[in-house]
Amino acid sequence: MICLRRLAQLSAPKKSFLRNLSYAHLTHRKLVEISGENSAKLLQGLLTNDIGKLSRESPSLYTHLLNVRGRIMFDNIVYWKDDSAFYIEVDSSAAAGFVKSLSVYNIRSRAKISICDSVPIFASFGEHPQQLSKGGIQDPRLEELGYRYLGNPPENLTHASIDEYHRHRVLLGISEGVKDIASGKDFPFEHNLDYLGGVSFTKGCYIGQELTARTHHVGETRKRLVPVSLSRIVDQDMPLRLSAGKRGAGKLLSVYGDVGLAVIRFPFLDMPLAVGDTGVTAVGSAPAWWPS
Image (cartoon, rainbow, N blue to C red; front, side):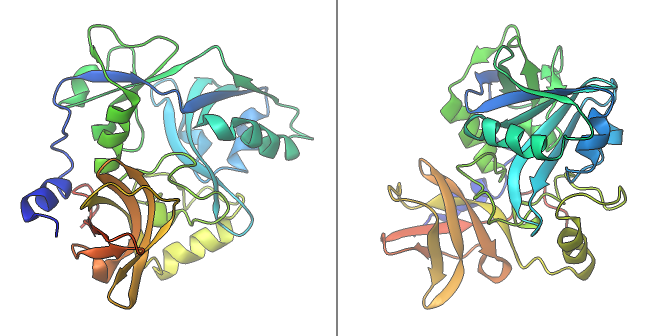
């Protein structure tokens, strides 16, 4: 059984385990550069968010690229470079596939699309992330995620491991990349795209827009991604079924030590759940940043 104190800590993710201001090199993320006079128009017709929101003053935007069935193909952060050029952050292992997907729709736009191996990505995080802003770009998903740095790491901060970054992110209940998101299978609202400001309901058409808009208007999201605390480490292939007795409660998507991310049906939040047939118990709670 998970101790209640630990569960309470998990459900209040603003109190990060990492108190010092730190930064990590995000080796699991890569930039794709897209440029050309029609590059913004191309992205506007493909991604879930409104590219028109990007500017020098507001240089980052969270978004997804969906398939025609409204399921997530890639999770992205788009960065403004200038009015006709953008960096798009994507999972490193999916970068080539992302470029291929963009290229399918690039016949008329003739934008230049390429993987940018020469610009590494760093993230700074910890308590009081507003103190990390110098030279950085605010992570558009949550203030508590801190800042992104493209090219050069921040100065005068403690270097943290990638595992510390992932734990910080997971305790906040944020999915990122192919380990957390099953490409072509998961729905965007299950991963809290709407709560994180990653979708525009006014911009017009994009791939997967019809199902996404309908889900939003009828309010049919009955399960969402949450951080979970595990009674012990799980060493099995994901996803794993979560259950309460004979009732299915959701699925465990990924594990990072003794915490993880799971999509859980609302009635089963804050309840001990069996993780497959592993003998492990998981408890998931809504993050503190969720809207009431």
